[in-house]
Length: 317
Image (tube, rainbow, N blue to C red; front, side):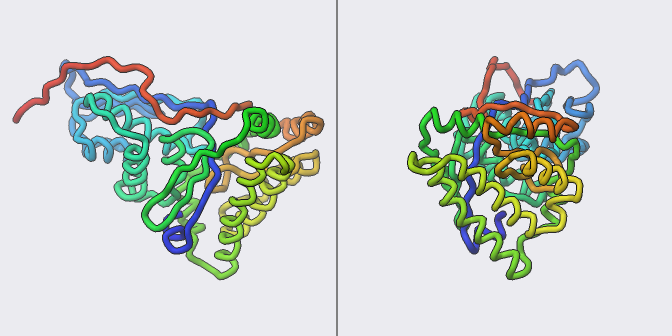
């Protein structure tokens, strides 16, 4: 969160995984009585960019001077679920816009512009980590300081990384929410106790990284740290968890999970548990009323998977 790390520094351990969003952009043929067509959970057909209801699409088109386009958005995961879907969309959309213009934008440029789009132009409250993760991809430590950040790949053996992946189980709670709404309720300026919790969470990033990279450390310690950080995070805001989520979490722990957390800002979305292989059947049984989502870590960030140059000339008025 910007208002915290500008004063205190910040860090996260972040990974991308094999669930995607797809943004297809092309110029709209001039046969229609509208100039822009957008398909997401709704369909918008407008003559003027200002009439677009979707704030991120409207502001991104204005920012990059896009005109007469057809945009189609699809995703493997539901929106507002805590897995960075909105930021993945923003990064992918900007990447597609640059490609349509025949221009290349590097990963940092895409991340920076997605942060600016969401946090400034759309005035959405939230952190910076999702945009950076979606742009850079991979298993990283991201450090935040003042107005900048650095992305440092975590060097972990393939075997250890696979073991970590195999020990993580993810379940969909069925609840979705706007991250921005949760963050407004839980803004980080607050009590000394809240800031002490945030400082402790920040310090635990170093320990978690050591667990991952050091062969002498037990990888199960990562699960224990997840439990500690989740209990710390819950204490930083009333909207982060709910009685139902707390009940589900404790049910997973009772069934054998070593730790876990609710992904994202809080309030709903996906629960992830760290579970040793011999306990996984019991945890899955305890979570049988939730949808189980298998996943694998993935190293790629945003990328153009198909590009066909289009001849386009703007109408000169």
